Image (cartoon, rainbow, N blue to C red; front, side):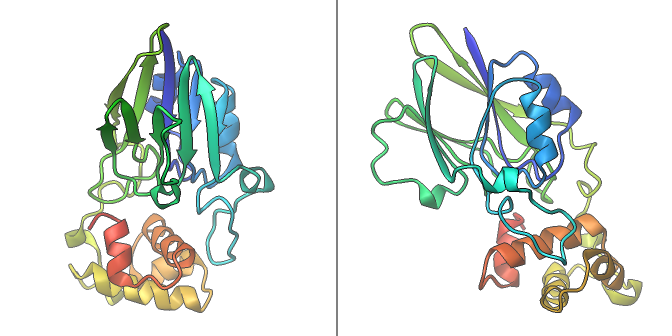
Length: 241
């Protein structure tokens, strides 16, 4: 029996429970959006890592505090590998999956932060979700894949503890507007953060101005900068709101 850890969208956070789940894995597949090379380096100490580049791994903006390195920018956009008799195709964004995937047994992708496990005949399409920074109501997840000697496999979804994420408890009713007034209108907050991002204000200043925590401000800035043309409602959808 061979065990492979499948994760994605760590966004600068490697949780202790993720490390524990990966300890006895023979390989780790990462679907992109490391946000810092330290995550990649830490994973490589556990097992060989096969990874693709996420949309947040190849940009640098002064207004956002986490910066990608050349190590992350050099990761491939897509990756085709075979491990223990199973053929994998990996990409960060599902939209980039080619039409013909008949040569592969498992398709791995990320980006949406939402766990997805679908079968098309004997082929598995798998998004392990995000095991890094929690996005509001979305669960924190990863997957473990067990492969037998004859090449058959089964996947196990792992739901993770959210206690290690400082913005995991944010709900719409707890988001405060300017001057500390309570406001459930997250759309208004997002619109104001987008305007400040255009002005290249630093994340810390944006968070303080709108009375939200820095993790939320950085999340909105990142989505706005990495998805040209997106509006507030589009950002809300990507946050799972």
